Image 1 (cartoon, one colour):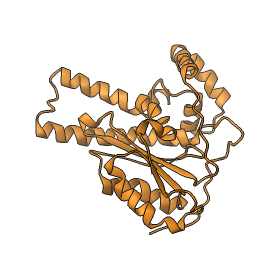
Image 2: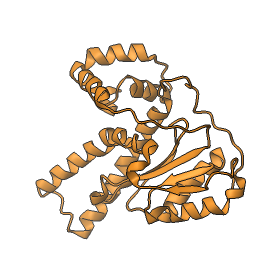
Image 3: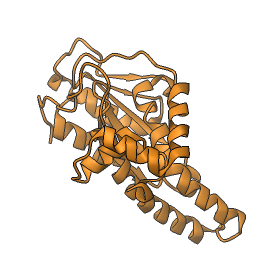
Image 4: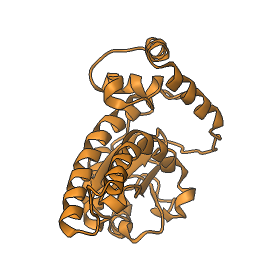
Length: 245
C-alpha cells in the first residue's frame, strides 16, 4: 500500500485508504507499521502537522455549506481538478478532473451528482471565477428546495477565504499533483515533451487527466474514510431532503 500511495500518507489517510479498499485496519497498528517501515517520512509528517495553523470554522449541520473550488497546479499540462466538500464533515461529496475549467462539466460532474445523491445544500460557497456560473444559476433556481431559506443560496468570496475546501488541496497536491508535475517538468527539461506542439499538448493533457483521476480515486476515498478528531466522529452521514432531476 505504501508503494501505491507514496510517503505522504500518514496514519489517518493510510487507515482511510485501507478501509476504502475493504481492508480492516486500526490507526494504532497503521501508525506503528509506518513508523517502522519509513521512519524519516514519519518524522517529516509529524513536523508538518506541528507547523499547520488551526483555522476556526463552523457549519451547523450536514447540508449547511457546500464548498466548491478548482485546483490548477497542472493547468499548464492540461488538467484541472474541481471538488465539492461538505462544510460540516469535510467529506468530499463529488470531484472530477478535466482539461480546462468548464461550466457544463462542473455542473454535470460535480454539483448535480452531489445534489441528486445528498439533497440541496442551504448555501454553496465558491470563488469569483466564472466557471461556477451555471452551478450558481441552478442553486438559485432551486432555492425553494433548501431546508433553511433564511440563508443566502450562494456566496462568492476570494479563493483564499474558502477555507474548508482550501485545506484539502495540500493533501491532493502532495499525493497527486506534485509527483505528476515533477515527472512532466523533467520531460520538458529533457526535451522529450514540447508543450508548444499541439499534438504533444493534446496527448499530454489526455495522459495527465487520466493519471490524475487514478490518483484522485485513491486519495478522495482515503480522505472520506479517515478519522475525524473531535466530538463528532460520524459526520459523514447526510440527510437527504430534496432531489432535483
